[in-house]
Length: 255
Image (cartoon, rainbow, N blue to C red; front, top):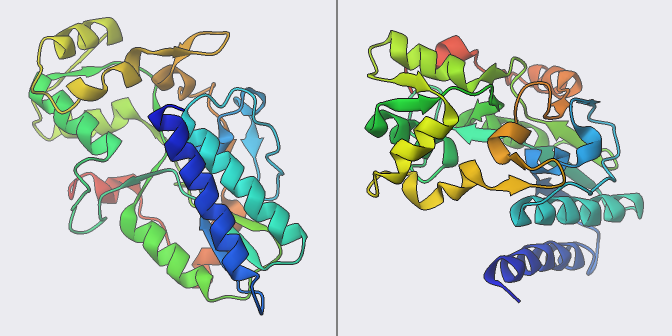
């Protein structure tokens, strides 16, 4: 068994253990932090997905992390159907704090921005970034976790107005960042020649191709290809509790 498979088994096994503990005596509510990764099945491409949709399809989910999230979610939802009070949160990319700008430095998007700034180049692709600040996710979970759980309810913690990577980079360029948008192949070539770049160890993430149509992960996340998770029900439920996702215009300066 490879390391990735061991980690996947450990993650799913951890979910099973939590469910077993929650049902030892009096049933305890389970709050699952899932992921946007559960939308990666081929059947959901360019399709609107509601909070109430049953995401039973798995074919086309290639990455081990994404597979474990899907399996863990199916275990929790099955427990919910059996009577255990459960709630699932599906956050997208989690970005830095909306006011302080503080960001986990090993996060993919943080690495991407740092790596591009070091290169002086950024890939010109229609990568649709579905990201929200960490304090929005924390506030949403805090606001909902103490509410009586509805059987199997899912919350989509997505930004109501997704934007393209090029929009974020454009915001940085307009504020003086020394960046040039270049084709992906040219960007990867430049990255290959800069071993000290924070993106160099994970450059295969941007070039490896998956599935029958052989798309890279950024290509799978292009507008018009990736799934379109709806968040209207979640936004309304959180607004009732005073939790609102900041607009991107409010985030560019802190970041």
